[in-house]
Length: 319
Ligand code: XMP
Image (cartoon, rainbow, N blue to C red; front, side, top):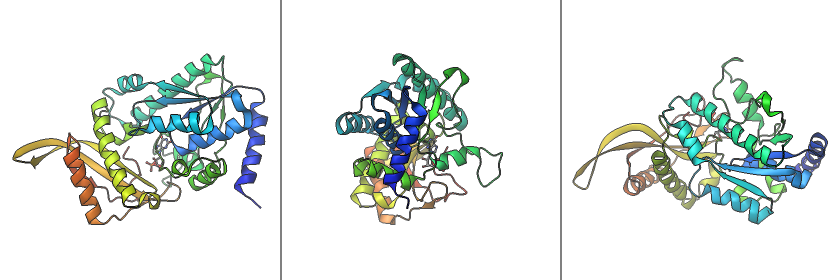
């Protein structure tokens, strides 16, 4: 008889057996997966764990505050918060290729964790909230065993020089199971139910070059979209909803003036594991309301489109 309570017990023993009296460092992304992994590992080995939250400047509006408060106030688990916006945005300057963005961000995360590991006197283990679908999709897709669709930033191992072993307690789980485990571990419902957010953050929702200005524009549009989704009571019916900012300018008219600004795309899908997805069928009036608000309230966007592509053939993220 398999329950989450038993899974938790088994995993706690496995983690203790793997880690011994070693030191673990865990990167928090702001998402459910890394939060659940961190809370579980903390329960297993206590202050042998150091949690590191890297703010890469590619987070959604107010996300950093929410993560920091979950760990420091709700759990009282010590957390090192690193402000690395400049490092990431400098490194992304001029980069437009999606895989190059992903590789750079993955590498920069590793460098920062390595630096934090040194500060705690050398960590022996790096913990990640890798899920089963992450493992599969980085290896292959239904297209065949040699096709990489996207390099998920948290899969693929560590550089040799790091001399750290991975701890990935969620590697067999699907998202809904991770949420159950999160509830079992006492994570607040508002956090457990959060839509997935990719490690590379807004960088892969801004096709073309990523700049602070474009991140700020996207954060505003995304926040309006999600606010409307919550107000309509639709948040929990949707697997993932987000805005993207396109590197395309179109002409519009506002008041009696001409505008020439960027296009914002809206995405919303239903799914059970992220591996396939269906488009969420909003009412036209809902989309009209969101589009009107975004164009009126966000400087830099003058047109909004809705993405009607399922996965496959589309992926959920645009890069
Ligand atoms: P795609 O775009 O591949 O996304 O259909 C499937 C699910 O995975 C998330 N995703 C990521 N999560 N690191 C992550 O932690 C990544 O590099 C990454 N890329 C995509 C995506 O948001 C969706 O939930």
